[in-house]
Length: 238
Image (cartoon, rainbow, N blue to C red; front, side, top):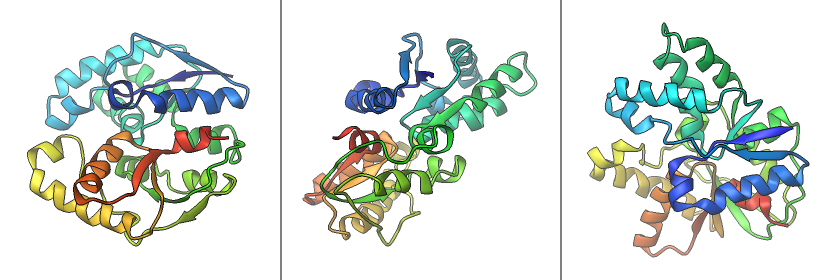
């Protein structure tokens, strides 16, 4: 099938290798990936800041950009949740409501898409490392994606998956939350990153680049050797 890639700002600007890894995995499975260059930020910063009129304008534009797409797949639970959960709320009662609901029904988080839509858990990857998984809040709480990334990791050859003792704790990023409440955000990062580091994993796997940024920041300042890697990068390995 033809799959439209939804590439969030963090991936576009800071981790382009994640987007390339998503395309690698999907194309390895025999699908065609399309990138629509007119896409922009999904509007989540404006939405979270309470500027709903501005966020609504971005939502209308994004709905138009992805019009006609059969499947829209993104490597960020946070940004996918914006399209799938919050766009229908933003555009309710407007002429764009039906289009927003249609896009929401066709938008998937990357790991979720592989398991639930394509019915695939083994993508032929090899990653000879001990890893632990970090559940991003939007992916876990808004999209209800928990088991899918773990199923994918368990099928990777030579990979050892270990769970941390704070699996559902927030890393403290929360977009604007980390800017408005930096001390609370840092304390939350200490709890979550510390929990992940105690697993003695070689890598912390995440499905959200924004969480990776937060965790890597605390880990590097604390002198920990473990670093984060996106789920797509693990699955792209062979």
